[in-house]
Length: 182
Figure 1 (tube, helix red, strand yellow):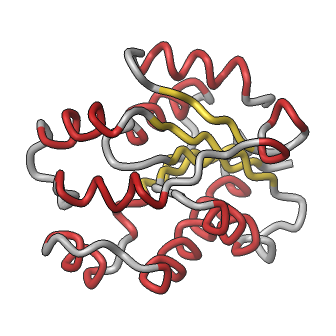
Figure 2 (cartoon, one colour):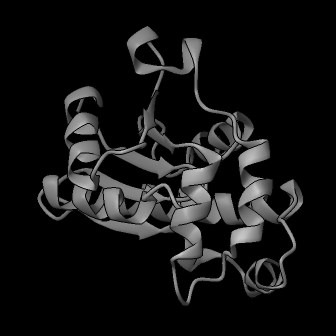
Figure 3 (spheres, helix red, strand yellow):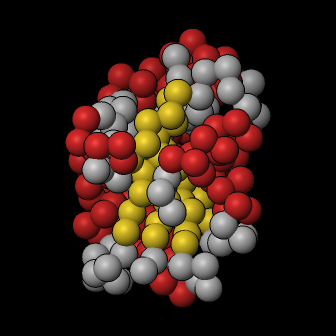
């Protein structure tokens, strides 16, 4: 059975870094960077300081889901790591549904990274050359839905919620590996 592990959360939580470390842990399994799949219209909108709407995200999330699912099915490890914000539960549900046709037995696991607004602002303002500007963090933080209750792996769901405050990427990744159930 193939598995896609999606690492998400608002900008500045360490999605790409943790996703790359997870890929290494799973024998250099494929990694799909969600930011690389944004259509130019989304990048232009974010670069102009405009938050994306749900309608802006649906096609991007579907492309990400299908690309990661295909790589998981084709890879010798039967695992693919993907990164994207997946800020709302409805986005996580859309990601799961979008790849069902690739392999009906495919499993998705979601790792939702989060921290305080202040820490996000500090991290994002120190990044250079990224289209996500620090003033966009507020919109992501405001719509963020951290997985809870039945969504959580500990309660039979498919998600982990991971507070990244004061933790190194290596510490975060070690915790994810211990709790993800793969």
